[in-house]
Image 1 (cartoon, rainbow, N blue to C red):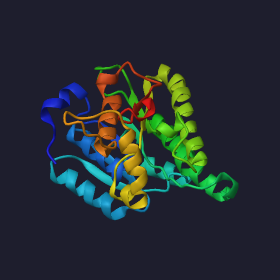
Image 2: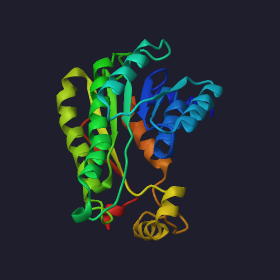
Image 3: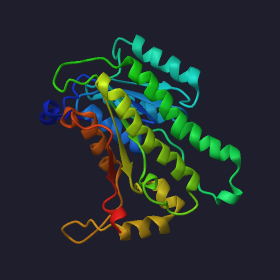
Amino acid sequence: MKKQADNIDAFGLNGKTAVISGGAVNIGRAISRHLAGLGAKIVIIYNSSRGPADELAAEIEASGGTAASFKADISDDSQVCALFEKIAADRRFGGVDIMVNNSGIFSMSRQSELPSDEWQRIFDVNVKGLFLCCREAARRMQVKGESCGCRGSIVNIASINALHPGFGLTAHYDAAKGAVAAYTRSLAAELGPEGIRVNAVAPGLVDSESLREFSADLALTVEGRNPLRNSRGETRLVSADDVAKAVAFLASDMAGSITGEIIVVDRGYLLT
C-alpha cells in the first residue's frame, strides 16, 4: 500500500497516531488502510480477528508505514485500560491523536422474542465499548502541531438506523446506534473546550460478501432504493471505502472546525 503523498499535507494526518477499534476487517480494514495511506500511524484493535489484524499491520509496515495490532475485548474495562497503557508505552505511538470507534455487533430478532442477554450484548459492545475507548483516548490526547489548534479527534461509527427505523427486527440495534449518536453530540460539547473534536459517520447498508450471503434480497432492495446513480444510470450499495473516506475527512485538519456532527453516508437512501 502506497502513501497518498499528494494528499498528506492537506489532511494533516502524517505522523499522527490513529487507534481503530475493529480495525482489521470490513469497514475497519478500509479505515485502517485509508488513514495509513495518508501517513497516520495505525493501531488496530481486534478481539477475535488476530490473523487479519496481524496481516494488515504487516501490509502497512511493508509499505513504509507504522502499524501494530493489539487484542482487547472493548466491553471489558480492565482490558481497555491495559490496552491504552500499552499504546502509551509503545515508543512508536505514545499518545493518541485519533480514535475511531468502529467495533460493533449486529443481530436481528423480534423484540417480543429477544433474550435480555442479547440486548445487553449489543449495548456492551456498541455503546459501553465505545464509551470506554473514548474515555481512555481522550485522557491521552496531546497537542501535535498548531495547524488546527486541536488536541485530537474522535470519530464514532453510528448507522442510519439511529436516524430512521431499520430494515426490520433491529430495534435493539437501532437503539444502541441511537445512543451512539446522542453520546457523540454530548461528548463533543463536553470535550470541545479541551480542544477535542467528536463526530460520527452514519453509514447506510454497506456492501460485503457476508451481507450478500446473509441476505442477497435485502442488498438488492436497498441498492435499488438508493437514488444516487453513476453516469451510466447504475446504482450500488455504500462501500467500506466510502465510509473510510468520510472518517478520514472528519479526523483530518480539513474538518478542524467541525464537531458534534453526524455525517450520513448512504447514497441517498434516507431521501427515499
